[in-house]
Length: 66
Image 1 (spheres, rainbow, N blue to C red):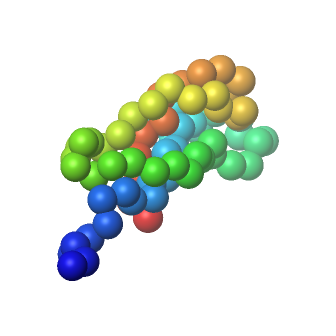
Image 2: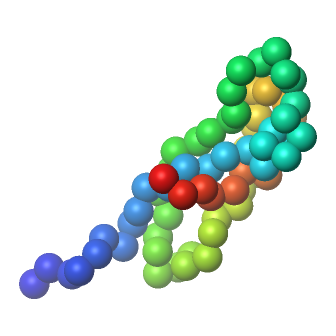
């Protein structure tokens, strides 16, 4: 029998320092990554350290709504 919802969901991670500080006014864009998470293991919002090409360093990327 099929379950109601999928366990693995696709999420978008967005750089938190670019959003807050609006770094590099001339560079249009905010660093975003697409990944998957297991809803049962991590029910809260996911935060990972990823490389941001606009900040030129590793920053915290947080989960955003679609």
